[in-house]
Image (cartoon, rainbow, N blue to C red):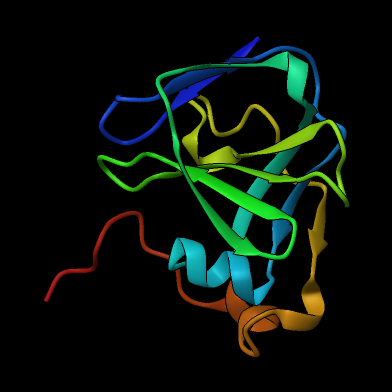
Length: 131
């Protein structure tokens, strides 16, 4: 069992079992929705997800519903009844333990930011650098 929540705690959830996959999505829709260069997702059967609270929803494209906290704005879930019938994607960054379902694949790479392939080679700092 894994659990997660939005930033403010108005919506929490738990999910049972292992995901079908865990992926990093680079599509333009995910990037714009999250304001981030990619979004981590883990796909589960809908009946394995229990949600406390009522997420707001947004139809971001044909057949797609994004679920988010209406208070703090945290993205939480993604559903597409045509592509993933009976399934729900959970944003892995909202898990209490974000290492629970490490990604095993990049998806929608054709839409990745052009600099993404070199991103792992950038300098790394444990915190913001001084000065």
